[in-house]
Length: 375
Image (cartoon, rainbow, N blue to C red; front, side, top):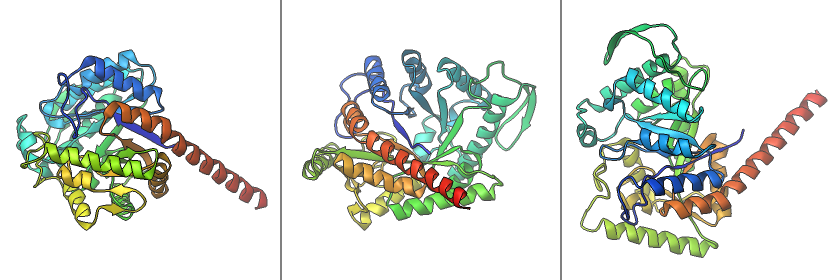
C-alpha cells in the first residue's frame, strides 16, 4: 500500500531556530509554502491549532481555493465550538476543497493552554468530551434526517445539517496522543492515529496499544498509523550532522535562560504524556536505531514533533522505511527551514521511499500470485 506524506501548512516562516520575519498570518508565505509541498510530491499539509494563532480553517480554505491537488489536514480543538457548528464548518471546507479534507481532533495536553480559551475540564474529561464530539460530528456529516443527542458533554434536539461533505460517507478523522486515554479514544474513533517519532521498539509498542484499543472498542478495522519526524538532511553524513548540531545550537540560543519557544509548552515540565515520553527517550541517549536523534527534542522540552532523523537522503529514507515495516502508513515531516526543507525532502527523500514501497508491493503481489498458481 502506498505510503503518504504530510507536511506543515505554516502561516509564517518562524520555527524553533529563528523568529518569524512577518506577521502571524503571512498570506503570501502561507500559499508559497503550500505550493512548494504540492509541487514536490507531498500528499497533504497540516494546519495546526494554537490558542492565539490564526484560525486554521480559514487559512486552509484560502489555500484550498488556490491549489488543486494538495490535501488538507485541519487541526481542531473541541472546546472552541459546538460539534454541530464544527460539522458544518468541516463540511463546507470539504466542499471548498472538492473533497480534500481530513480533520485532526486535538484533546489538549496542557491545562494552561486549554484554559486560555475557557476550557477547565480535566485531561480525562477532555478525552471523554473529544470522543463524544467526534461521534456527533460523524453523525452530522452522514445523517439526512434530524436527530437528538443527550450525552455527558452535549445535549441538543432535532438537528440536521443542510451542508454535507463531498467525500462519502464522510471525511477522515485523525487523532493523536500517547496516553492510555488517548489510545482508547483514538482507537475507538480515529481513521488515522498520529504518533511522534520514537525509537522503533517504542513505536511498535504504541502501534500495538492503538490496535488493541480498537479491538476492545469492537472495531473490525484498525486506524492507519502516522508518525512524525524532523528531518535534517545533508549531501554527506558529515554535513548532515554538522547541520544538526547547528540547529540544536540555534534552539539553545533561543531558549537560553529557560525561555520557552511558545506560550503553549513548558520548556522543562511538560504536562502531556507525549512530551514526557520524548524527554525520557532523550535521557536514554542521543542516537537510536538508524538515524533517530533526540537532542532537538531535549532542547525544546519535548515540544510536539521534535525528534530528528539525521543523514543523507538515502539514510533518512532507509530510516523511514524501517517505520513503514512496522505498519506506519503516513509519514509526517517538517524541517527547521519550513520552505527549503519541504522542497529538499520532497526532491530527495520522498521519491526514494515511494519507489521502495512500490517495489515491495510489486514483489508481494508477485509472491501471492506465485503461491496461488503453485497451489
